[in-house]
Amino acid sequence: MLKKLTIVAVAAAFAAAPLPSLAQGKKDSVVMGMTLEPPGLDPTNAAAAAIAEVTLYNIYEPLTKINEDGSVSPLLAESWQASPDLKTYTFKLRKGVKFHNGEPFDSAAVKFSYERNAAPTSTNKDKSLYQAFESVSTPDPETVVVSVKYSEPNLPFLLGQAGGSIVEPKSAPTNVTQPVGTGPYTLGGWAKGSSITLNKWPNYRNAAAIKLSKVTIRFIGDPAAQVAALLSGDIDVFPRAAVQRSVAQLKADPRFSVLIGGSRAKTIVGINQRKKPLDDVRVRRAILAAIDRKAMIDGAVDGFGTPIGSFYTPGSLGYVDTTGINPFDPEKAKKLLAEAGVKTPLELSLKLPPPPYARQGGEVLAAMLAKVGIIAKIENVEWAQWLSQVFAGNGPHNFDLTIVSHVEPFDLVKITESDYYLGYNNEAFNALYKQITATPAEAERAKLLGDAQRMLATDAVAGFLFQPQWITVAAKKLKGVWKEVPQFENDFSAWSWE
Image (cartoon, rainbow, N blue to C red; front, side, top):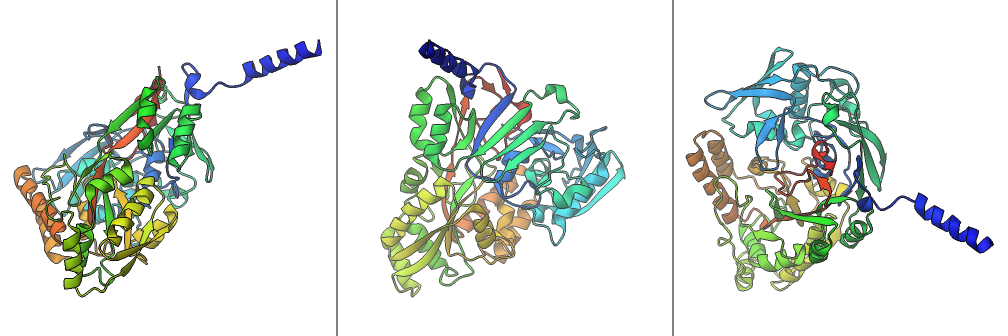
């Protein structure tokens, strides 16, 4: 009798236990995996793409929204009109919108957000864009007029990025940990190092259209652990997963959709030109000549990438193939180092952030450089360290080499910034970029963009490696997940279960 009761109790326990998420039917919650944890939750004050992955279009909203195909649609702005010279844009704002703290959204909040982005103390990743605004005027609470110092045909797209999120003035100082926006979700909780929970905001202007009441985001950096979490049903979806080596296995599993999409990202070897001998173009060209891009793509991302030769990607306006300017040629690399008077072995630091493409790619890069007499001393750092030591505009730029993927489209302007981490300050390039921005005619603009790409390649501004392809793995019944990745975002408002 005791044995029978035990069996019944065990069976009851199994019946009560929750099934893995992939095995459940239609529901209103999702568990998503992310490779990196964001350093904070204010997308307007830091460059980490992980912030946008959590907050953009979910907690915060910009005036415009970037869609999967790269097109732009209205969000907090109902419509906009551009002047013929593309220097002035008039935005009509959505009425009746409120922030999570009950404050009204209006043109004053937009003006505050944009002027905050442009302030001298701003750490917005797109600070240079907002500093190029001649003025932000507010004729009435529902109208904003943005005047730009130069012609900018991409302004609606640029304002739809994370840095253009509209913040509520009183909450702005605490948004890093207590985010307040106008979006369909609010922060439910943040277990540092583990997960973030977002809850549907019942007072959202179109709450009935939001199908997911809860989204849990789990941070899983290790590729093997990402695969294990998917296979066990612990997570429902993993956008931009580092699962290249398990794609065949995941494709064969009928529970999953495996989406392999294009990007506007540029994975590069960052070279700190503030340091000798890296200020010598011959040394930078030697580094590039030591790199076999195909082997790098195979080793860093298991073949999921397209070679690039400049800070620009295939599919963008005016793209030209510049991979032939600095081809793989180890013997040439040795000659260039000798010409520059560099005694080998030359020791350089190689600081690597956490993503697998950087850590795996760093091993491949070090082996390639060693063959030409450059010893790359690998130092693995956490994301926050990388941002503060390598990338931060105010320095200390404490690195020689690094590997990172720049995921923002239309970011050639970063190269013109005097405090940009690469340290490339070339007045000829800056003048060319100004000419690009002053040219509204698309054909002429495309030609100038080609000139810019060739100049960056010739000057070996960085070790241009590849345009990555991103892999997203999702439960088959989960709809609305993007395949293409024009920018890093996860628009939970569009997700639902069949």
